[in-house]
Length: 403
Image 1 (cartoon, rainbow, N blue to C red):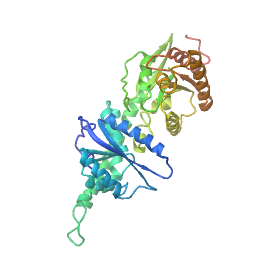
Image 2: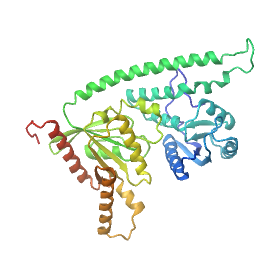
Image 3: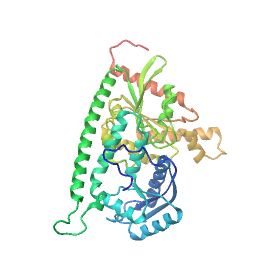
Image 4: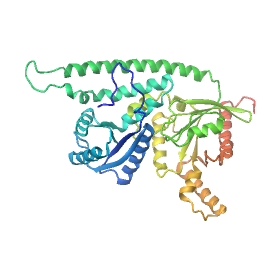
């Protein structure tokens, strides 16, 4: 695999800076609909664009289960080969994880770089990491991704013929590399542990302020909302995983202070080792008093996004925390779904009905806002302020009122 990580060498962050031409490949299994797979592939295309690649075509194959050697079967592989030779494609991205052996076989057949969804996400994370903690977390995830794939990646050193003296260096080399990778993983975990202890000290030094954590699917507008609420400049961009490091800001509503933290966005099919590596970053979510769950209501699959985030929150054991559901991008939702002939009264009636429906479905206070146009942001401040005040009263019932 040409996009692997060389042991002991500094890896170049991200894909090549010039735009690479790519094709996407997905498999439609028996337990999936074609619409679901197309949605996953749309997200994969967004990931590819975030990493700096231009998608020329999407290939799908209906299969009960992926082929153990070529993942998609030799016929579809030949079809892809003809296309990439004709269009001068340099990269093929698969929507599911490949084994080292599959990657090697497909790469040998197509003669281009092969990347799967996990390695693409890792590549984006590597390009986005800014702090020592994020860089260490990404490197740890990369090593954990690489370890089970070493055998497949070392096929060029395996023995070609049997017999004494013909065993070749493959087995020794792979065991040496496994040991190196395992040692590296151990060192990275130790380094993360030290960083975590430093972060715990920092959190203790923040005093007894109520903490609010922004959570949500990637690219739903969490950082933009944080900029509006905290009046600070947090990096925000219309790309996946624009925020990788947890950012904490002190916010004051009137005279009432609290801490607001922005966290890494979640995504479907997020690699397990990546979740494990970033659990320390999500400590802000574990230790917060209030969750602000931001949703892109204009996205056709926003319900699936909510389910993905709730599943991750459940894994972290924080699903019972007081939660404010903020349905962002109201302006875009109207643009996609509302008729231009609607009166203002009709529009308000529809939005009020949508709000009630969402509160019934998710059992939390729900608000419809637009961070882009700043619509209903004052209402968001009022509701969030009331929730923060309520938490102060629960935590310090015998303290005199300060604000």
